[in-house]
Length: 490
Image 1 (cartoon, rainbow, N blue to C red):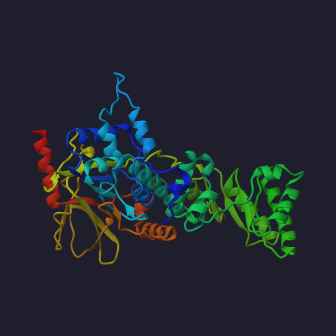
Image 2: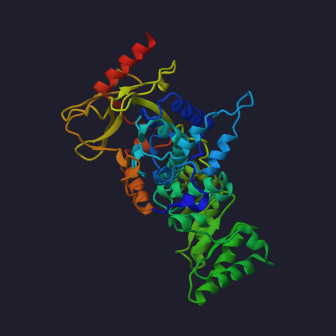
Image 3: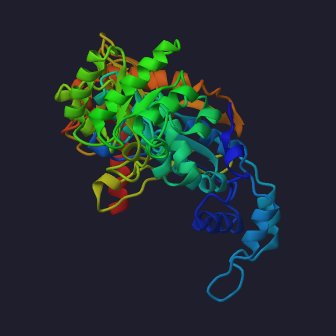
């Protein structure tokens, strides 16, 4: 498994967390509860971008983060320096630092594989083990999974709009820093992009790196034609000409001139890229010129602030665009700056004891959590289409015959599953801190995402008011949750 965290940062990254996780860890240690066990789940309440589905991503870098989890001497030194409002250390017991320096990750982790289509209210990751460890990894785990899932989902939407035509991720220069840009390139590839402009992501992940030249190349020469010919001389097997520096349609004609000279030398122009203006009209006019000039196979790539809505509109207009370069709106998750993934405590137990369910009750019904040690079963109809996802407590597996699932938001919405087959979505990743999961090649993860999105019904993939997918609680889990809510409110 390529471990790109080593290449981007000096690990370990145990301090990639919020300070309150550390103060709680100190409190657990001081009160003798450090070895009590807890179960936490990562889930989210709404699909991003107002969509009908989400593509989960970020598991492989999360594994790398967890495998190297520890506090080194520099981390301990930093924590010794932290002071409270009285000027005294907030970590006052030196023995805590010795204990923390010896801490290693020993939790169990189960997760849904990357590239899987998931939906709100179902656990994406389950962590169970010593409460201090499970607490300390919360922020880092959410940081990785939330962002990459957001970008993978955005990429899937853009690629769906492109209707199978290639989409290349161009967003590094507008992304949120080196890690944001590199993680976005990885996630965009999972979501369906065929390549990236990010050479570092190409090196680290094996993503095809794509790109030709910028407007500055054209402006560096006395004329556009000379710039194209010089580029063709330098890169004869990589010629996609950017044609909109001065006059787009004249630029297409100049590209054809350079393309003829290139052809005389035994090479072929790949095509042109248009980065401004009325892309639908310019593409139609450019297609005419290229065909008339003897380049019917030359591709037309469009770029310039594209997203799924613009791509869909251009497709609806019949624009003869063959490929799409999508940058800012993809790599930054434009339209929704963050996935609302949360990490909630759902059960606790003392060493040697049984699991005791826990839930958070709030005046906002949507924020009332689900207790228990949770798993998710995906049910399929006899024709192979998705029927619904059932969340259940793994201590009480659902009945095989006609299980009932109940909406966590509206208990009057119920679905009896009959004749469906099912699969378990969460798979073992760590057992007692040892990795038991081999991450598949990134290309396989991408193929999984493409296949899963393709299998969704059209009404779940539309951008305007998509239909919701049924996710429900297994009957006994629903009853336990209801009882605990009533007890908490009484």
